[in-house]
Length: 439
Image 1 (cartoon, rainbow, N blue to C red):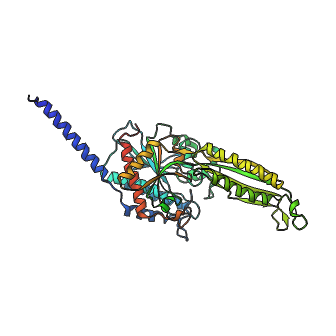
Image 2 (image 1 turned 90 degrees about the vertical axis):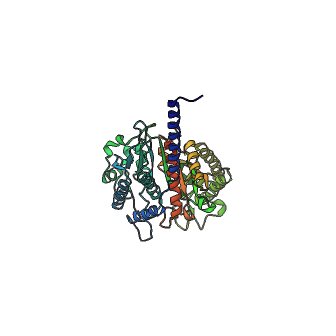
Image 3 (image 1 turned 120 degrees about the vertical axis):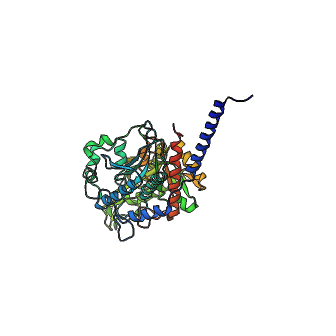
């Protein structure tokens, strides 16, 4: 039986549309970033705040930061993005999508540095994000979702830009003096923001389809293992305590060893105890004593008081508390043994654990695999703006290797091919997200 002519026409149109759809997907799958352009722009950005050691001192709100931001905004415009600065001083480059009812896919990082920092921390994520936008623009690819490339303000000074986006940049924080010598309030004004209207920078759940941050690992795991991509499972929580050890200051020459209540000796046992508790507990947690001060601090006086810091990091808040309780038990034993008193005072919970979105992790891993890149799932031991963004949007992070695990140093380095690999994974993660994976 012959089919009616209109049925054949419809079938033919459907077949044509399907073939065009497959051709479009194949074309998108072939898109790649320019390694040479990424490397050239990283080098160009390194001029702003360059220091004699070979790195940068582009601290937030400094003249070098302002000049670097101008350069970044010029690149955004070249990539077909419409640029604005929000009230928190975040730079946002936006390109509209085909559907106005969809929230944007956001990706980016920061360009401010620590004093005497390196040329890759944050910069790779920003230059890589602009490269993704430019590849889409040059290939005339318009996504269903709008895209927003973001450069967060003052990441190194306490995640200022992302804290404003989630509505948690307090008035007290605005009065903190930054490395630039300006208060956060003054600094935000200096870079084009408006600290009196921070509410206009705030985003809520549902306002952003997904957020992705490309970043150098800042550790040595990927480089040591020869793995090309890190799929970040989450950003660790960080808890700090001030530990005070009280003994008795006395003459070093006339006090027998068995009569001493040496606070510094107790502190030495504590440092070893922290290391033992954290090392012997299964998992990937870390614990650090990074600061210690003995009083009165004279060579001929037994220390009567010691102040020291304690920091614990892990992906689980419960695990952090478990470790802390074990360290407290160790402290009680040491106090009895040394005749001292040991107390713990919480300083700050600088960051709560921030797991990345499981679906986004899977997309990043799939993108790496299709690009023929090796990858592993891993935590981030350092803080990032992504930990704030994870509270309002499905969030993912892509790590690339840091040679030698060096960061926050002029010797920080990531290879050009690794930067391109990370940007390609970012590109294809964005493309997959646009196809409605999270809807």
